[in-house]
Image (tube, rainbow, N blue to C red):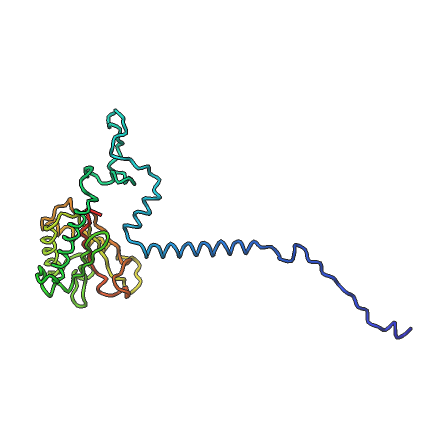
Length: 272
């Protein structure tokens, strides 16, 4: 009896698990939503990089909530003859309207007109680059010029070189070489009637500043180029836009490279 009384007492506790043992799955749903959102974000970034400006504009127009209005009369007999007051300002998916002052049937999509415009832009590109054997640009000035034919038109880039800037310091005052380049560009632009876009770009600042001057500097340089072109008798109505992009679109991977300081003059396509 004494041996049995000294035996250890074993108490067995049974833990009951409720709720199926998964402790809830709300975090899984939240994580799945996060992964889906990240995938959508990276897909968007990839599409923005892989598409042209013309394609992005087409996508934006597709999702535009505005109702396309055709130039053709809807049969009304009111003051506007069935047309809306916004007819010329609406980019209709049917191809009518969207270009103020453009008459119907003016050959905007005429293959012959498109081919002729393409040939003119290619000829100007050859003259500027000297590939045709005849160049309007001196060898010294041609070092500052880069051309590219895009969906938007002929892009003529005028960029800085190491030790040979186009503008004085961090200002919009052009150097003599820039004035010579713009005078020559005014002559080239006189060979065609395409609209012109001016875009200013600057290199990234080497240090963080309390006030970011890149936006004002790029816009100021683009505006100064506009003034010089107009002084060279380029019709103001041909200048469609003047934009400053700061340091957001570098031409080289090194954001502080001198070549990122540039002005892009774009001869816009009239026929696409």
